[in-house]
Image (cartoon, rainbow, N blue to C red):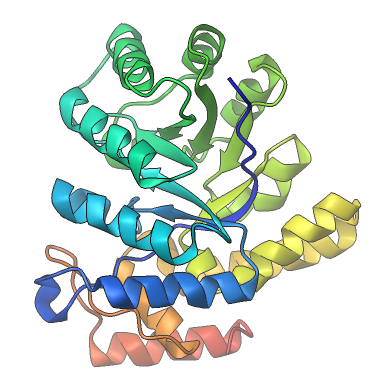
Length: 298
């Protein structure tokens, strides 16, 4: 299989909903994708955690991928998040992503139940083999789904399944990220999903970053990425420090609405959230605007 060429800065694309979260606003979603493309990002991660994918129906997730690929697929690398708690639905969305023209699929670890490594191995292998030749990225985010993709399991899957070509790691464990990098084959795509050590992940061989905060301040991520590509560690660290302050302003994922308000303050209205997510109060909006100004983001 031809190796996937996936790298750079990927905002975890927000999904705009109409008021009350009733419907997906696909037109506004495509507008946001274009807005970010103009900022210079390399790709988009669609229907992930920040994109409220788990709160969307399978039909909505399919259409979202189709719309975004249609809008920016020729300019940006679009990764469709296709993971679900069951294998059958994950296969359905992954096969659709392949047909829709996505560059790859990110498949989150199934959650709610506790699964051992054999359960997870079989799940990921079965999904990948349903789309032969289509690049699959494992998606590790134990804080949301409870189950961890251990480095040893990453190594095993990367060795045994040709089209499992990478991983999006939001595990929050830099030691585990290092361990993954020590045992994967050459060309394995390791995408960091933890903003606070974006620079450090790139330093040990990470291919790029997928981030919620990149919806709001893609410039900071691009500055880190470009500085690291040039070997300018001082400049990368300066931008990383600014990014850490930005993360504090957004309470790092506490509410998706904080990211949507941040994007709104920076010039694009990304719509509403879907319940049980909630909108910000008037006081919270004021506090966020003040925090963003203090952090030099406005």
